[in-house]
Length: 337
Image (tube, rainbow, N blue to C red):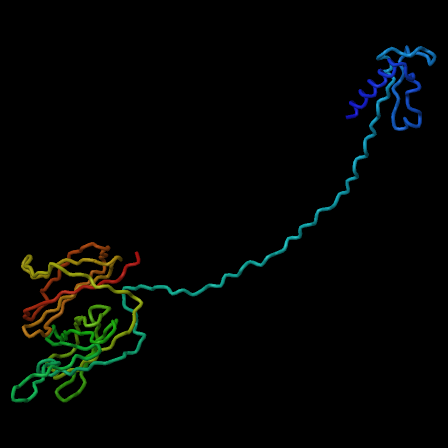
């Protein structure tokens, strides 16, 4: 911008000179007007004041250029940055929250719930209870005994086993809910009514669903000939920390192999979880439907994956009583691995 002004002033001076206007001395600004402008040094061959007016372009060297006075740099004042003071934030203290964990063992837990019901049966030399009771009437119409609304012993019998006594039978869940850890307690009496022995055993299966049966086998250290009668009672738990599932049984048959009799069949896991600690039980009945023997097979080393099948074989050399029918059941525990 300043350069453009200087060029314009030079052109004006040349124009005035050509028109016979004032000399360069007259046209030059006064000393007061050049207080802020520094004059250029005169050339060596400058023309005296009395000289004739310069030709066009001569006075261009007499034009003073403005001098720029740089502004003083701004004074920088250092402002100290705020000092960061670390603030210690206490770490959050983790408070453990109890969670319900699931504990699985191969052995059923000790009972923690008192029995809610007790079914008692007394056995003599007469046929086992319960039995149909005929009602005296002209038509002799029998009236069956109502099914108890709890877990009860449906059938039972005894036979000598070595030097002791074997008590076998079947419990049924007549209640409205599934139960666990069913236990059968027996007391044995002499002919004089004296208590000579007592024993307890678990039903074969850990869980007993509604209207489902489960066999039991009890071996008692008592002289069979000294036993005149015995009484039975049942207890159970309302819950269990172990989860049980029934296993489907198929292709059951009795075979002769190498001179011995055995029950063979197949187990099928129709559940979505693997099953372990599988127990297979065979219950033998006579022609009246009473239990005459029980044999169980524990397959604790086997695991049945979902949808898989597994064969089984139950030897029958220990069955010493005649039977006409049999039923095979199986149950396992949920596997966590």
